[in-house]
Length: 289
Image (cartoon, rainbow, N blue to C red):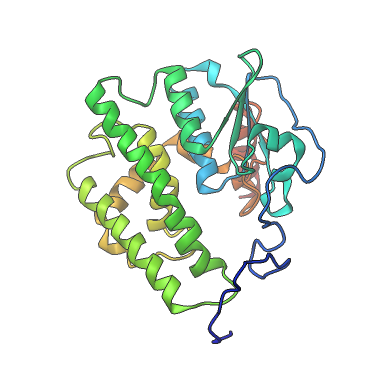
């Protein structure tokens, strides 16, 4: 580890292979890097994603919609391997010019409609199906308050704390302390709010919960950055109670394995085209046990 102070150049220049987990794909330019169309399945909704916290927001909502009886929410899900740069294909950059997962195509429109940014996808699906978002203006506004809180907070937790604590090639006290302070403040915000609310919007489970849980719920459950002990998450009992309740939902369990390419084999569903895909995974687990 280097202790030498960094003095920025007068004009910053990109240096290829600058270290870190994502050095091989990070560049200061946008746009496609190779030509490759996206695969297409039989359903109107085509999802291109990976089972990161931002990715599973969408698969959880889709599975919740299907469990609630919205058959038109059937979807095909294809894995986008971000470590191999699949998000820079010509097909994916047409779906999302920002080259970030997830991206959704709704072919029920002519021409097909692209939706990118996880918060935008959640809002689109909730409005399309009139589900998991209140219609009363007061309750809806509160729901959207928390949805956009998460979208604004995630860069602190993921790109800030997660990067410097888990992925940076060198560990330095200042950035880790800086982002740890803010992440713990955010956990305290949630903990105080959930002291008097079953879910983020009172007694109603909404897209606000679906947006926040993959980041902060998994964080206090020890499934994100292996940082639960470091952050002393036992301080946030209300967040843990809320997280456990959401994690027990069948649709959440299914949503968490779609487009997952790591962990135990029965926890991975690289592509999803039908509800029976989950049954095969269950059978596979039982067979192995």
